[in-house]
Amino acid sequence: MKKIKSLALAVSCFLSASFFTAQSLAGETFTSDSQALQAKLAGLKSFQAQFIQQVNDAQGESIMQGKGNIALQQPMMIRWQQASPDDTLFVSNGDKTYYFDSFAEQVTIMKTHSLIDSTPFVLLTSKDPAQWQKYHVAGTDKGFSVTPNKGVESQVEQLDIVFSGNESGLASLLVKDSSGQSSTFTFSDAKVNESLTTSLFEFTIPDGVEIDDQSQGE
Image 1 (cartoon, helix red, strand yellow):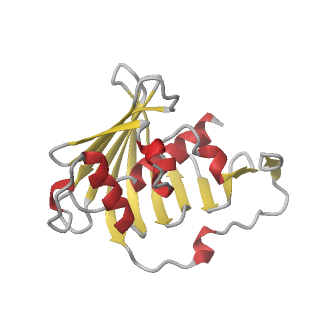
Image 2 (cartoon, one colour):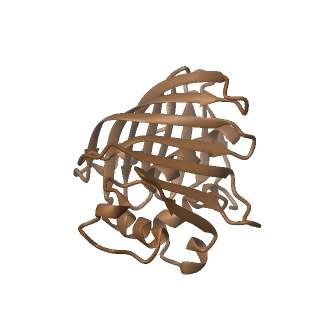
Image 3 (cartoon, helix red, strand yellow):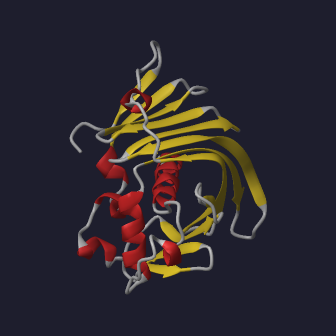
């Protein structure tokens, strides 16, 4: 379950990025970095990209490398496919989320909203000031850094978002969790706000796999 939530967290952090810098969003001026990020989110409708992942432990030592592809579309539609080191698929149609581990031949089914209660993911779909006040958003030279405020329970300790300075925008994303482990995602071949079919975010459970349905009663 920790691995699944880590995937959800990484996706949520990525959505928090968009494809302009805070200082150049349509020439607008904002009173806070949080306000700038909210404005950027309003303009991000879909995103597709390839990624390379580097995971380091709390001491900065490399513990895993991976690669895959991602497709995102508002509201809360996600397709995150990891090709290595494991072949896994994380798909959300906005209501239910499916996590398929082909090696284990297991599908885990979850309610999407149950995954975002303790992550910045909630900021992606909420304009509620009370939710935004839980997190501190700071502008950086190339993007944003997001941290939970004191007393807020969160799976993430720090999000660093780096922009490439062109229309495809996002260059990399650093996700640091409460254990000190960090994951850096470097993106390439990005496509922003292109029309995506809803079938991309649906999942058909293969025959013969074990099903762990955690969506009931949530």
